[in-house]
Amino acid sequence: QVQLVESGGGSVQSGGSLRLSCTGSTDMISLVTVEWHRLVPGKQRELVASITVDGDTNYADSVKGRFAISRVTIKRTVFLQMDGLKPEDTAVYYCKSRITDWGQGTQVTVSS
Image (cartoon, rainbow, N blue to C red; front, side):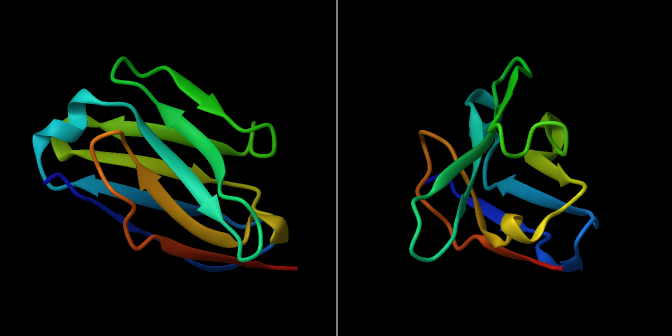
């Protein structure tokens, strides 16, 4: 079964940056759209960004202009560059595709 593993989370101050990584266990991940989602306890999971096999991207309005999703096929990795972080970006971030289950996620904490 194909798995995705998230990494790169941490604690930063408002205005800071982080780069999240999502690495697939097989090359199959290069053949599907990959999404980044985030979850805050007590709230619904939010789709943050997605990238297709062809590199087309989409973003939630809340992160447009601050976050950038990209993929490096040879590394089986999808990145989420997060700049201009705000306290409301604090959440557990997950990557997901149609052929993978939810993973452990990576915690992002932004302090004011």
